[in-house]
Length: 311
Image 1 (tube, rainbow, N blue to C red):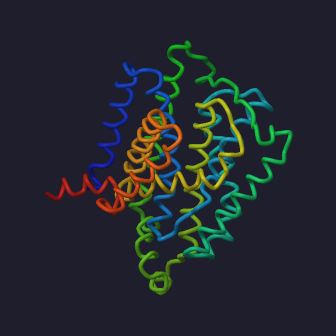
Image 2 (tube, rainbow, N blue to C red):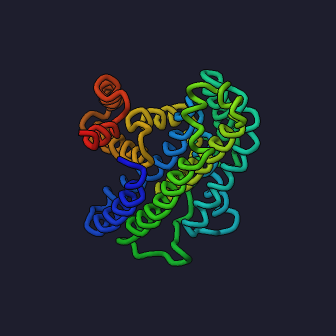
Image 3 (cartoon, one colour):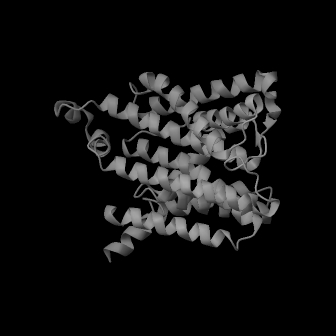
């Protein structure tokens, strides 16, 4: 898919979600909303992966966004979904600005392991903090939209609609960013960072910016997931959550800003069906799916659309 067609495709996808949501059952609306939340996290991971960096600790910001939204609701009574999502995004971005000065210095496996270590530190702190529910976490206030609580039959659709609009804006912003000089540095940094420095650009600064953007998107997704599920716990910062995001990234590929959301939706469908059919071995089904993708589609599911466009 060409870059020029991406905004139009994003807009058509938004319209399709809003239209289909009117007739979809409640469980489908929930699945789509969670897919959008996880897709936002993977969208940020895509930026890092294009630089050749794999973060094994993106759950850190996913969890920060969730807890920021939940704590804001508990302390102030704010329940507006958009406000909570923005609070989660800002909290995650602020933490990433500070940690980015450290992580932007590292590359390869060191970047991944350091990000994982920081995420596990947060997990350990949350498990020991009784004020935040310790290992049990706490419930999130029922969300409202612009101060209004929709009717029970329309709550999930209203949340999905707002999530789809926010996701559309985020994906379009990332698409525009990738077209800027700073965004275009990613492949060059991955191929030869030294030459990037010779050209007068700062690879460390570019990585720092991408790291903050990825964290903000993860915080946004975490806040959305927390308000959708209605509960928060430290497992959101655990290493298996980060592994799930890596799984989706590999499954989807990095060819387009649409790929993370497609991958998250496919992951959600596989996970739901596999758990329903075989609750004790659903992980094996996910592993088999990832193995098939790696063998036959090494560039992710999105590469199917690129091949179709080239034929």
